[in-house]
Length: 423
Image 1 (cartoon, rainbow, N blue to C red):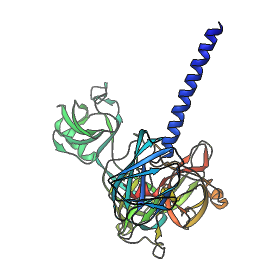
Image 2 (cartoon, helix red, strand yellow):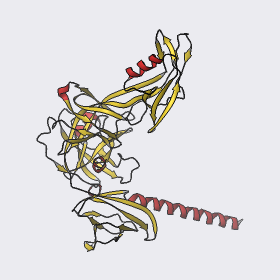
Image 3 (cartoon, helix red, strand yellow):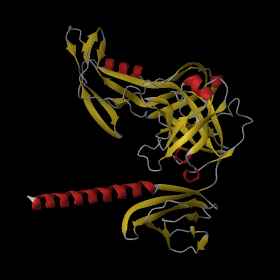
Image 4 (cartoon, rainbow, N blue to C red):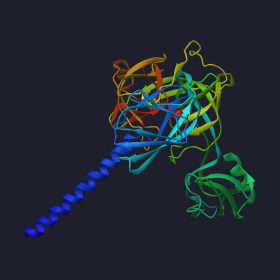
């Protein structure tokens, strides 16, 4: 009995040791960034404090350890258990192969050398109108035939999130065109060419006659969408970034595949305060007159929407350009966000509570809490429509607001600005 107890204890101790090793390995892996960006010609200091050796292979970077320079070579070794500084005189990419205790390879860090960039932080509301690249299928439904029977012709054929591009080889770009083509072929089967999960495929559907010269395939569709958000920055060549997260379809919860889009001036007309379990939101009016068009929407990605402005937006003409703050320059502590929720563009105080350099979600690397009493009284914290509000720390643009905590509207997430610019 005693021996069995000893054996069980040894197994438990071994299992505990394995768990500790795996957990420690995970923590060290999380402590080392997946990607590092440094500005060409500028020293960037890192203090990771992990028992890891890094090897820079084939780079032209200079490495300084405790301010003692090492001569550049084809292979440079770094002790990541102490502070080190990277510097490269020219743009480019290289990698650092990380070895635990200098023996076991466990991670490769991408290093991107970029030119120093300055932008104007915006924080102004924008109206977004985008056309989908194809006709977005939201779901399928039942149709009542001319015989009074119910049918669901597209069930298990068309899936939510599909983009319908053709009908019998003929291109369709709007809901009206899709209806016209289906009616054209009557009860004859139609072949829908669609994009599903990035791949082109074809499916055959049998339309149902629902009325005099009216035929349906039982698919709910959308070909455009509009919404309100916040512009984060614009550059010297009039390129802008906004939202910090993708424009997604509310029904399919998928990122919209963009056809074309436009940016419009908008006015905030109402605020629904955030409550526990229920995020608030901004209500805005978008003016679709051509003279109120601010620019184009050229791209939609996990890190936001992008495009080019027609001119400097009203109210930003005298705002100065500021430097970009990279991840390694940030620290938990005081910061501000810029927002126009009150009808006037201004800064509000926040506290950055944590930084996750390896977040699985590209736009949740920054966690913060609103501490500005005026903003708390106005909105309760972060509300929908504030996505894209610039985050500044130490005079630099470091990120943008992206999400609110559902259970606590005073807390939110943000994206690192380098992720938005590194699209």
